[in-house]
Image 1 (cartoon, helix red, strand yellow):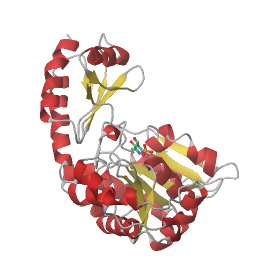
Image 2: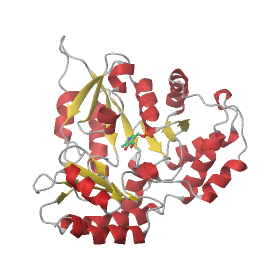
Image 3: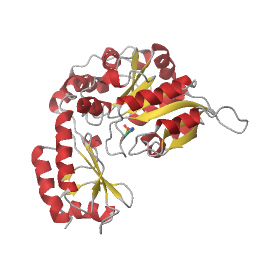
Length: 340
Ligand SMILES: Cc1ncc(COP(=O)(O)O)c(C=O)c1O
């Protein structure tokens, strides 16, 4: 099987796993695991922020960051198809008691006018006040879309001028950095907090990190404890993370090349519409074709290729470490067979 369902299927390399055996460990709830401290400091440095905090997953990272920024009854502005809104079990509402303001984006890209309209609408006794803006970069359902730096800065400015803060779900931030050639620290220079995933394209088995100011991370540490995220000898998670940040970022370019190969063959099928491929994700719209997304998934699976079904109309293919050029060439040869 060639499994293109998600980059979360990436398996750790032998070199990465070997780092666990020699990692220096301690109790991280007591802040005494040197390997965790090293990873947190390294991530903070890479992202140009003061401090970092290891968390168990992207979902936990977004939750802990948002718990730190928000109080019950605060408003959060976010894109309608964002991961935080759609795929994190409504943690914003269930666990924080925050109220979502949804913005209809264009493949994940929010129009500053729409965001401004919410942040500047003023006081009304009937309304909740927006306190936080969440951005997703790259945007998963947008087809791995890179949110342009100017857009991030414009949106952040609107939030900041109206007493708001900005959190970035940067599960795949390094994909954006590699594809644009812009340092990750530059991309996020105007947002207060960022969550990055180690367990997607970077190839780690577990883990995410949130970064922000010293004060933010100090508060986030307690929120992490609250949701059961205080881990003990977490250096066994951090050691692969350090390896990934030092060795697995530049190679994302290869995944992007593979995704473009998929984009090319898919766009040759006239009835299919492919969202522009910026990074390692190809999202395909089948609505103008004789196939449903389920037909596409089943047809490809018969040829040994797994893709994600994203509702009636869309399916998704994701490239990652472990998916080789040969695998992609195989997929490229099968696609015209399935869609004919
Ligand atoms: C954009 C985005 N944010 C957050 C997450 C959540 O990460 P996790 O699965 O580690 O909770 C994902 C997972 O796919 C994602 O795609």
